[in-house]
Image (tube, rainbow, N blue to C red; front, side, top):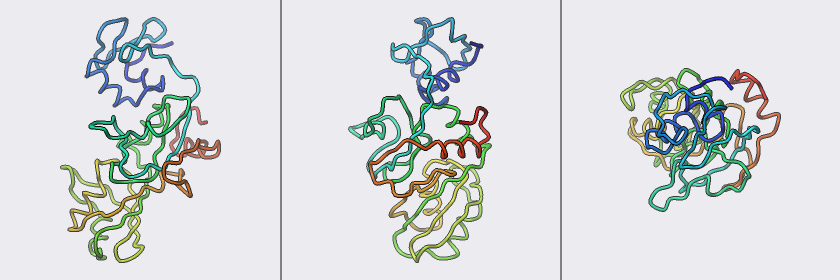
Length: 238
């Protein structure tokens, strides 16, 4: 096996995304041949033993892809203060992780996988991949405010990309984003003087929530994964 950066190896092994691997490394949880690892370290996986929390990492040969309808009140990051993590509510024989975040107060579609490549292709800022949401606010929201959200605005010290916004009713709308800023929709709605009541993600690229019930999860079909990989131009299309 060729030499590669440690975080890339951990991603390809299906342990976590590269970003999460960097977090594990910086917290001193990763070792290479018994020595603490450092971010950016280059290894030859066939010649060293890499451990996470003293458990050896072994590359998973089979890449798997699931979707889940995350309920409100469930977190997508490491559970703290008694919070339930989305990984805690599934029962599958693979070590998977969620792609991107869906905050605790929101519900809807999450993609779970052990394929770090998919995470990088979906959330890297240079790509413009669609994520669609249903939004309900407290009280009515006016056309002028929806138009403001279609255009760029400053949140988190940077400009948002243009969004597609379609009204459903006086206080409900659909929005399609092509970026992954933290709590972006909630911040955009607050920017125009309103507040989110309900927020549900219903689509990521071609992967749709459809009639998946809360707490329910299912493995993506061959058709879904093939189309997704084709859309993302990922080498080695499934």
